[in-house]
Length: 350
Length: 286
Image (cartoon, rainbow over all chains, first blue to last red; front, side, top):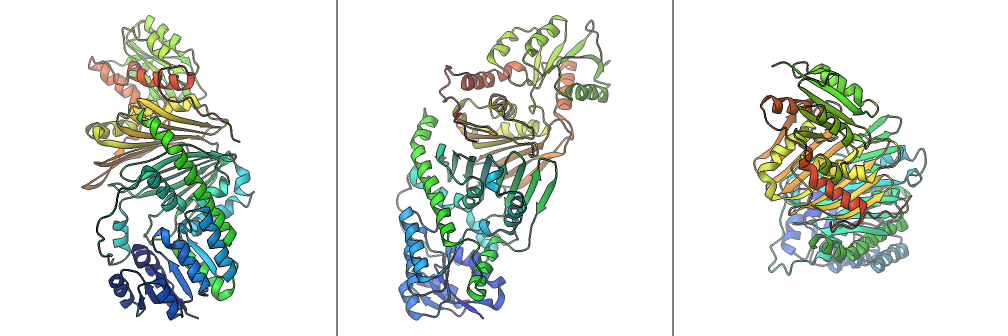
């Protein structure tokens, strides 16, 4: 059975992440609808797939016939679009991260998809990365990860501009430039954006070892864009670092150090379709196991998960409550980081 | 020129004495092991306990041409002051200060230092037991000093049983240091410096072993990997001391050059200092 797919948003994420991934799934999926307020952009993308064009989600839903919608619009639209898609009876939604920006929004998402029975997968590709999943399974064959702590976890992300990788993934059709651009975001908005836009890729993985973070020691945004956040909770501590864009090697790592275990993951940059991360797992007896790189990546695994739910009735790896807990964890951390921002900035400026 | 005598003294940590004896044996053209302090010689002080300043003083009194202080747990301002008047050079061979990757990084940092905006340093210790926060801070900050990225103000410190996190400033550059300790960990060092020029990244494994390493510079012209010598940090230190004495110069990496770093670490961990940094956040989580 071929699932029909509607793109909600036709920008870089749709073009350089989801369309190349869908192409790898062969005849199992077919893009039939492309929605974007930039109709010229939507038309150009739709023409590549023989799909219909819509300028609004209402227009797309009125046409009917979409089995799966992939929400890759700006963050502010995710919740209302998920609600509309669920209410319209779309069977499956692949929603790009962040699922929501507030706890209330997260609750709305949960209510909407629970009421409709819509299958929901979040485009947090690291949570589906085959190397992470294999390493975690090996680790948890002993005991749940959280019981193997205390841990220190370190997430470091250094990337050149996204455009470089978008252009490697596909022949990008850029949206029409928009005038103005508005005022520069405040430091708080920038920091929250860093957590909810980039750190959130790894936070669900961090949560497996540190299910509660109740204190942020230091938090600041970095120029030109980035963040440094140190946080801790009963199960250990984490530091989250990011800086981009710039002239440096792409470098996206996540490491866990516990009393008896070291797990180091090296991820590819976003938009890169070159297989999974590489996970190196060392234990105190000196043994080391390496997982990956596997040929498939988290993007492909997200889609295969959604397809298995819809076509085979498979149980989701991450149920709705798990997904809500993931985003609530990120929102809580963002709140703590923003609350620590003034204190941290004052300490730097002193 | 005949080889200088090398008098090994002080208190060794397990394995350190054997490592230094092996080092001396590998460079007979530079040094010959000796118990004699009568002639020209270098004293190599194994700083396995906090009594090493007395051993340095004794070596200087015995007429050493230079004294190498090998891997003190921490250097305090009092240590520096006590040895400040030494008539002959006292060299600090901190745990990683002479690692070839750190030496290479220092050479590459120098021309772009004013443009460095962000530095991150990761020190992974494969030891057992809890992390010693003051020693870890000294190790990391002394390594940054050796790399030409001297921290001059600590902004925030978080201490956890197996981790130490430091946010700091090195001139106008922001610095973040992560020190972790786990029996399962691969000992290693990573220092990355970022700025408008691009980036510099040094990675090194256990500096007591002559692992291959490299420093990668990425700039507008592309990426350039600079392989480093397969030498232990101790061998690099010994070579620098030999070369400097042979040329009648002071060796680099004099203990006195680390005085600001010693003061900074002391202020953070002793409290009551003038350094504006908060004391370590030691709230315990297990």
